Length: 357
Image (cartoon, rainbow, N blue to C red; front, side, top):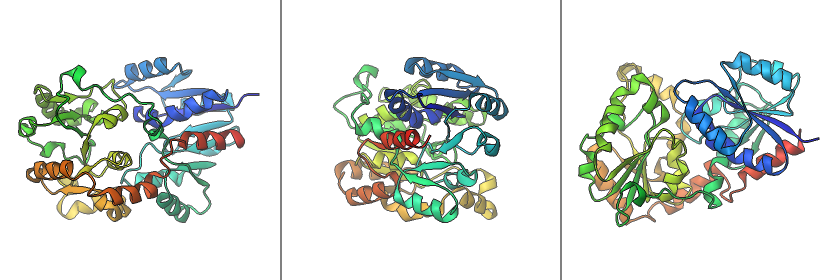
């Protein structure tokens, strides 16, 4: 009898991590279903991705509907990207597995394991040790980062800059800001003109493009999009991977994207200038500190930093001229946080799931 597995899709950005594992399981004859939570901002895009991959799917409105489906299906495994409200009921009929969608600096990376699932797949040794210390009763298996498998295996076609009118003779910079806390509001409206010697690809976070509270971010991005050396990724271009394959350098804040790009042994520029809400500034800055994983301070020398927007161009130019400057740090921290870069994280995850169903 074939193994049965269900992927719990609470957010669009889970897909980049799930799909490589899904493909590996499918090759081995496993029966997989994606349970997708309805989201008016992303429904059409989710449908498009699911149809392209040919993935059987079920749509639900909330966790309660999802649990009802899981209890009826009695799959061997239900796979989550976050905690789940009633894991004990699920465990009456199925096993649970969890793996995150990033290797970034937020404390949520650890707190999602407050829901004790049967197993959590972890990328590198550093986070494995911390999770084992925080949750000694948990089961954590180091596998590597499945999201990056398609890049390590050369399965991702690089983004075609010529097709969108960018200059193939210029270096290409990828800017992938997160939604909050973000450096994006600190960037100049004239950024493209100040960086006219480069192709600029902007890959905003999904929330920056969809949530009403980030309208000012969208206004700035729309101004940039009018410049000839800028390409702004469409909402339908949900994966960062093709842009990572093309870019020569990445600009971002303390985010998973920095560590993912560095794992490709390419230079990054880490923005230290952020626009914080007043509820995170001054005497209330402890809220921001609490939100972020302080262990990330041990990895700040992953690459060059820009303390302000005014410094950014100088730092970018320096890194493009000296791409090997942080080679040893990229290698060291990739081993610790991303884990193996052999393109077989999905294989290891599938091995465990099928051997322990």
